[in-house]
Length: 125
Image (cartoon, rainbow, N blue to C red):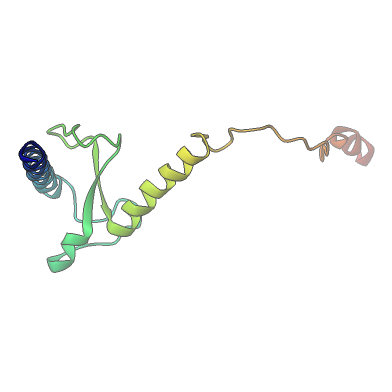
């Protein structure tokens, strides 16, 4: 029983420390991003000032939150809504096997709208 309690406390301490470290990292790169970039959402173009600045988030372009180069090249500022949309699109792509636009099964259409275009143009002359 005592071993279980010690293990639980150890796990809680580890999680607590991990959360503090994550908050410290996020605060650090967020502050740097806000100094580098204008306070405008890179997707929708909304501007943020004052209390609304908290709605502007840092998005990691490569989705690696540990990749925080000093020049900010892996970041872009996105509003809460655009940031959620960005991650939702990735989740949907993952659900469909990571297909990009244009990937997937080829069309089985047999219609060829311009098949006789050259012939029609010759007839017009």
